[in-house]
Image (tube, rainbow, N blue to C red; front, side):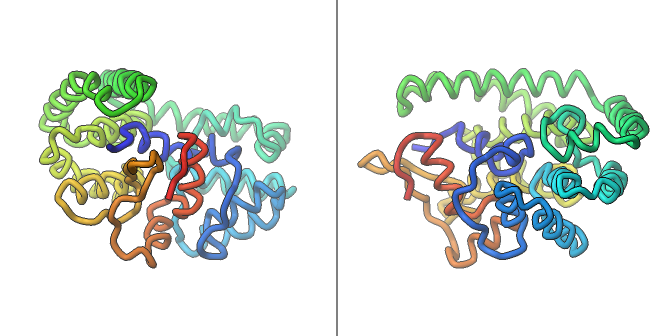
Length: 309
């Protein structure tokens, strides 16, 4: 049995900055100098070390998890270099990968220092102008519908988990099928819901609906190249692409590539489903903005309260 809500939670644990800045760190990254090594340094209050590693990663064109660039701003400011933090903000603002809500409201030492600085009022005006421009270009009715359908999906999934899983997931089937049928028509009419079309939260919701459409593996496989194309253009999350790739590969009877899918063993423990090239797994995960496997397993064990192997 697959834990149907696992992928949604996984992305937020692994990539969303709101959790990245507060999640306990339980394993070192596979490679020194990776994003997750910098995150560990932040958790240890080594703000200068975090900023140095992330600045180097940015200069090398390395991969940041979704929303991870804000950690560069946070670490730089927390290390006392507000000028460089503002410079990073100026550079990154145009990328659209900074969460405006986190930037304006997240309670973190570096961000708080920036907001209390003399240059913040002008920066805030620029941030709000960029956000207003972005929102004006969205298909807001589509975004709203995607978010509402994702909420219904999650309510059905969590109800099934609370009921003990297994056959209880059958109760979620009507919601999942309705969402799948609706999204199929949307994609045929408007294309894949990208960041530009539906916002980051709307695009994430669209991915969730596909990810849970296990009753229609053909549809999942058809959506995969659309999400891949969007991800290459910076219009979808690479982590979402990785998780859907695993879903599609396993449905086709092939090993997964990124180690995101687990199954429940007879003794109740969670086990990694067949995965290709385990030695290179963490490198592939890092390239897609995912935690190292050991850290992901620790997260799952804490989340679900059962052994993970």
